[in-house]
Image (cartoon, rainbow, N blue to C red):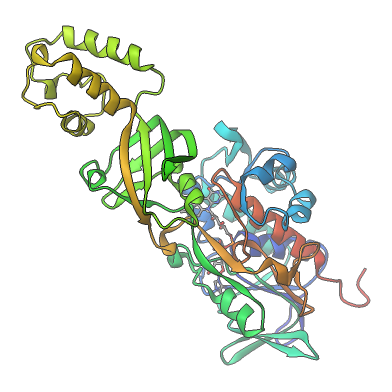
Length: 417
Ligand SMILES: Cc1cc2nc3c(=O)[nH]c(=O)nc-3n(C[C@H](O)[C@H](O)[C@H](O)COP(=O)(O)OP(=O)(O)OC[C@H]3O[C@@H](n4cnc5c(N)ncnc54)[C@H](O)[C@@H]3O)c2cc1C
């Protein structure tokens, strides 16, 4: 058990997904554990994941999992095989969080409440006697090159091991402000400069006009210099600065090295209809409203906000009567609906990204333990590391797996069993 001023087996910075998993795992093995976090609350970011529903993991086989990891998949192999999605699901079910699997193998609590996931971790931690301190780890004191204490300003927490689970720099309001990078750099470890992953994109002014409009079941095609980088069906959202939503966030991962000089997103607004069937459909809709202005004739086909934009782009006068629309104009209308193109100018800043790419260089870390190769007793887990993945529960799975491995790797105290 932890006692004040005594040496704790494991001090953890960060009560997020990775830190809590490391804490529970180590405490289950009988280690004394103290978790530091300047947030008074456990899992502040965890509680807003998946729009407040928490996409806990992705129910796929580990081998499949790595296809969705965009940075350093090889590095996390041991961690994910050691604590794969099925084990994570079992862990939370046993912790009293029934789960369900939705489209794309995405796993959520049956309750649709991310709070339930965070609360389950909090309950387990309290039952295991894990101590929490509202404190901010700033540096590490080494003795003979080994971790001896975590330093928080005036206060020190003597310990045998220290796990840095401080997250990246995205959504800094949740507490992830890059402290882990500073701690690592001060100790001479390399840090890959952070940059945004899964981030909304800045695009054409037309997006501002469509702000607030969310489209489901549309096909997105991302191109750079005319080459297709990504294409998928799903959901997207227009915002005052450009575009967001699941399709766009995933698309952004394919633009990591882009200078955005020639990037376009083309949206097929009616992917279920071939151009010919779409034309038939428009003809049928038109035949019922021949004397209406075209601006009032497409309500059955398109969301209201899109109608004036599509008509303008097709070069048709919005006050043109339906019976005066030429075949050429109708063709161009169909083309605009099948290929609604938006120019992309850049990504939003890393603070607005769902995940931070970059972080502590994985070359510094032993993938079998999550321990820093140069500094015995120093561990890293979660988003602080330079590894990230697509949407679908993969990023939390990385946090669970690496946190679990760190918690399992801290040696038992001498005399422990
Ligand atoms: C809006 C949003 C939705 C998301 N939805 C999903 C989803 O549904 N599924 C999914 O897989 N992923 C999702 N993610 C990504 C996922 O939340 C993160 O990858 C994951 O939370 C990373 O966990 P972590 O423990 O490494 O870091 P974090 O959850 O960021 O936790 C880090 C903790 O460290 C603390 N800390 C920071 N500095 C210090 C310090 N110096 N000392 C002590 N403590 C410190 C912070 O206060 C924080 O509590 C989402 C992210 C966002 C922003």
